[in-house]
Length: 404
Ligand code: PLP
Image (tube, rainbow, N blue to C red; front, side, top):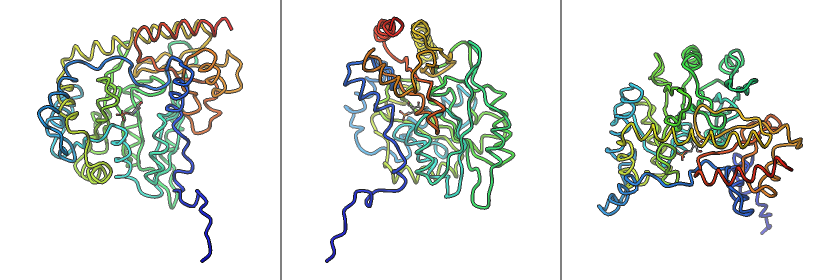
C-alpha cells in the first residue's frame, strides 16, 4: 500500500486557512505574559450586578439545569420583547421572532449561515469588529468593505462617503449580489453612534437594492454626550428586512455567560432557529433565567452604567493625549481608537509590542480592524471598561511613554 503523506494542510478546511488567530485574544495572552494592564480585550474587570448573579444562583438551585427550549427560555424572550417595545417602540412576537443564542457572536454567525448563499456579498463598514470578516467567509459570503473615515478635527465624528456606500450596494455581477449590510452601532472600535440621517440613508439603499440589515446593537445602552441609539428595525420600511442582534455581555458586564439573541421577521427567525439548533442546541438555561432578571432592571441601572463608562472614558483619554496619542472621542461603546503617528513607529504591531513589553499596557493594533493592514497601521485601540484603579495604573505607565 502506498503511504500518503499526512501533510497537515491536507486535513484542513480552505475556509480557515485565511483566518488569523484573534488578535484581541493574542494581546490578552501577551498582557498576561508581561504582567501588563490589559486595555486590549473588551471585558469589564469589575463585578456584575449582585441581583443578576443572585438570579443565576437561584436558577441553578431551582434545578433549571437541563436544556432550555432550543430558541430560548420563554421568560427571556418575553423580557427581550418587552425591552424592544419600551426602548425602541418595536413590537416583537416572542414566539416567532426571537432566537436566544450562545452570545451575540453565535447570533451573528447563525444569522449569516441562515441567510447567505455562495456568491452573496455582505457590506461591512471598516474599521470593523474582527469577527465579521470570518463570519461572512464561514457563511459562504464575501465581505465588501466601506470606509469609515476618522474625524479630521477634535470632537468631530467618523463619517462615510455616500457614493462609496451606494457603489458597494450596487455591486452586482452574474454570480455576485449584495445580500446584507452588517451594521454595528454604537460601534466597536470607533465609538461612532450612527445618526438617524445616516441610518435613513442606509435604509434607503437597503430598500432600493432589496438588501437585509443585520445590526449588532450590543452597546445600545453605552452612550455619551446625549447621543441616541436608534435601532434600524424602527425605521419605516426596515422592520421586515432587519435582524437585530444583542446580548447580555456588555449591558450587564457578563461576557462569560454567553447569552445573546437575534430578533428577526418570522421566516428569517425560523431559519436562524434551525442553524442555532444544529450549532449549539441552546444557550445556558440558568443564565437565560438570570438574563430575564437582568432585562428587568430599572432605567436608573442603564443611566448609571453609561455614566460610569463616561467617567472612565474621560479618565483615560486625557492620559493618552498627554502621552502623545491623538484620540478619536467615542460617543458610545467602551473603546477609544487612537492615532499613533506622533510616536514614529513603522506600524501598529511594532508599537503595540513596545507598549505591552516596555510600558506594560496591552492595546489592540489598529490593523486587526481593517482588511488591508496598512489602513490601520497608525492606529491602536484601547478598552476603558476597567476599574478606576486599573485606569490609574495605566495612566501612571503611560507617563513613562511620554517621557521616553
Ligand atoms: N459584537 C461586538 C461589536 C463586540 O464588540 C463584541 C465583543 O467585544 C461582541 C459582539 C461579542 O458579544 P458576545 O459576548 O455577546 O458574543
